Amino acid sequence: MAEAIARGVLKAGLLKPSDVIASDPSLERREHFATQLHVAVTTDNAQAASCRTILLAVKPQVMGVALDSLAQIAPASTLIISIAAGIKTAFIHSRLPANRIIRVMPNTPMLVGCGASALALGPGATETDLHWAKQLFAACGKTIVVREELLDAVTAVSGSGPAYFFYLIEAMVQAGVDEGLSREDALLLAVQTGLGSAQLLLETGEQPDVLRKKVTSPNGTTQAAIEAMDSAGVKAALVAAIRRAAERSRELGR
Image (cartoon, rainbow, N blue to C red; front, side, top):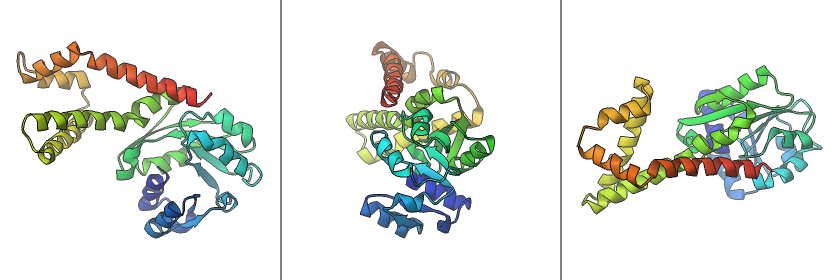
C-alpha cells in the first residue's frame, strides 16, 4: 500500500522522488523502492522521521513497536498519517502526544489509480493537514472524510472489499468453466462485466437495485439466478461477512 501511495503522488507531481524516504526492514522492498520509484531508502527510522509527513504503513500488530521507535526522534511538527486497520488515533497520540495525526483507510486498487480512501481527523490535526492528506490519496483514487468511529465500517466495505469482488469473480469463472468455457475466456468475461457494471453505476448515478431490476427480465435467466442466490441466502451471508469484518477491525483496535 505504501508503494501504491508513493507511486500515485509521484505520478501526480505532488512530490518529487527527492522528497520521499522509504524506511523498510526488508532488503527486497528497499531495493524495489530505490529501483522502481527512485526514492531514498533506509532501515533507520530516524532518517525517515526527518520528513514533514510520516506515513505509517505497518501491520496493526507491530504499530506499538513502530511508534516507540519514533517517539524520541519525530519532531513535534510532524504530520502523522496512519493506514493501519483498527489502530485508533488515540493510541497513536498516546505514544506521539505532540504530533498531528490523521487516520486513513485506503484499499489495494490504489495500485492502479482506482482506490477508495476514507480519512478521519485525529488529535492535533488541522483542516490544512486534512486537505494535504486528501491530495495525497486522491492521486490514487476517490476520497471521503468520515468520523473516526466510522472507519471500522469503511474497513469492512472498501478496505476488505476488493477481496469480496475477487471472490465473486472466482465463482463466476468457475461456473463458466463448468459450463464449458475456457478459463481464459470466462475470466475475461467476468472481469469485463465487473468493470463495466461498476462504470455503469458511476455514470448513470442510479442505485444498484434499480440497475439490477433493469437487467432482470421476468422469468428470464437473470431472475432464475437471483432467485437461486436469494434461496441460498447469499445477500444475508454477504452482509453478515462484511459486518464480521467491521467487528474484526474493532477487535484489532482494542
